[in-house]
Length: 439
Image (cartoon, rainbow, N blue to C red; front, side, top):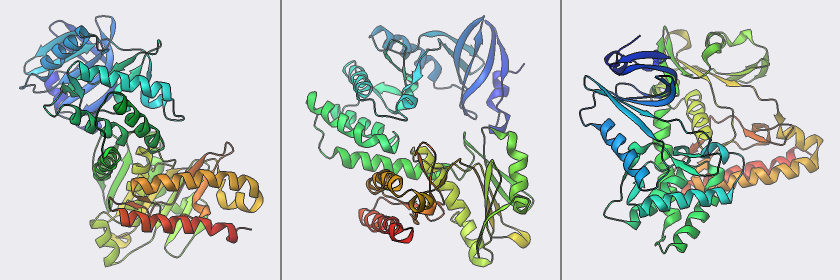
């Protein structure tokens, strides 16, 4: 049992199921869905025998809980599909908003593997209906929509729904650009085209829309890149005796094993040994040991641009953008002692083989796979992304012909078009050179 005041002071590492007594009854939290320490906590649980989604507002001096409760009722009254508000509970200066869970599938998950044009059009119709009712979802992304079993689209996160600004349709265009930028990179071209058709149909000026999308995408990438270097809902950062550990918060049952691999990578079988980088692996994990040392290496660590840190940041960024890559689970930056300047990073091992092997052994299959590689390179150019070493050994393929990109310690991104063009051309030339190399 715990109080709301105690919950307010939870840190990232304390988040776990709990129950809290209110004057109206007991809230039992079974799963933590989102945690903003000291500000918000969203849980799935039970209230008086009923399943609920509970949103906890800590130190709610601006009455955000009351506002969201009233807004949900207003939106529902205007015919906007939102979760039903069940009750607003208050304790001291904290508030708890109880909502009815909505059954269905997340729109983001439904669009992960394929472009569903009818579903995209249903989403845009929902956005337009919201706009015509005088509202705009200021955090417009696919994760804030849920598709019910009957095909209806439900708007989530009412706290981000605001009255349409005085700019009117211009605000809607910026909002749609934000939605495109926050979608998976593979989906963005189709989504942008659907938005252009949608705006033309409704008579909305869509000039420079692609430019706005690219600007919003770059802002998102910059913000995400900074986020993945600090404590957040996905990543835990902690100090150890001779360095700093970055690790994924989810699925931490293997935490001790990862740390052992980072401290002593030699306990694993060798996969590859180079002059500055060694790679080890077992059936589950791949461990890369960057053996750089000296003043220059320590300076790079301090500036958060060591090869290990770049691989960590880019791995998380590419995964966020839906680019197929094994997302790293742990990075240790050794900053003191004999190993100062070195880094060790851990990835899940994929059941796949290098595209270079396919080029050698199955030429026709490799040529089919190359079509997908070139498509990704075009997407990288649009987004201003570079791999940095786009050779066939750094592209993995599984039995279902699904690609994955690895070795991102030379990857990067920029909003400068010239930078993107030069880097993309190098990536393309490096990939095409493989056809002669692997005859």
